[in-house]
Length: 101
Length: 235
Image (tube, rainbow over all chains, first blue to last red; front, side):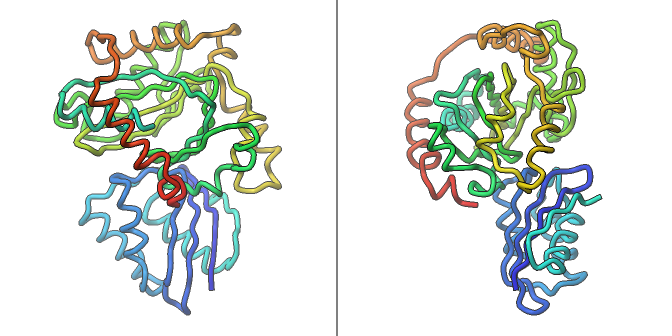
């Protein structure tokens, strides 16, 4: 199953998330949008880190560890909003547009 | 884009912070590093209107570049001319633009993370990256704005609310022409911004042109990155 969502991060930027799910596991992930991440290449690291993760608290833990270990700085988007968007993509199963507020 | 990268690549070797003022010919749309080209840009309309489309090294949103002054600021990270803190460094570099607007008789202010606003409306958008041991920030200053044309090129997240979005952008974005109620040239704006940078960094800018090394590097970067579909369509 694939889920897509366009999520306006409250007080932040626009996050476009596409997730491929195999039951409760993330099989593919794409994070796009007008946010900032330093270094930029870390976005691929973030996407890859969640492949194989089970939908649930594990996602947040993986992201927080990765961001801390690699000193990634995110602006206009954060761990919470990525997790929220992934959950929304899971629920929607199609492109939905959310103001996030 | 290739020249901005070439300067940033060179600046840590020369140790000379560099500010560049430029415009786009033909008009172009640039998208942020993390954006999807096909999602953000109406490529068919770009072909019809002979508008280029390119992915930036920096994050942020899609920008339609036509009647504007674009600047790039590059300095070696280790020069500590700007803070290691990204927010602080945006504030410093955008502070130069605020000074420049002041030279033109306008009261503007930095609006974090990456905008400058005047009379409550956005007049400048900015984006920064740190690579090649350098800080590279580039941004736009709108001389004129044509929101309808902009949205003939830029896609919106939801076509159903396009009219509403166009209306909202018209209310939130302004230009030097609108603020000063007269035509404002690239040269006049560049002169004011030069003074703005000089004030903010307490430095005297020396006019120059690209070095041979920068020219060659720009050609190489254009060929290997910015003209390649692998780069422009990578997301």
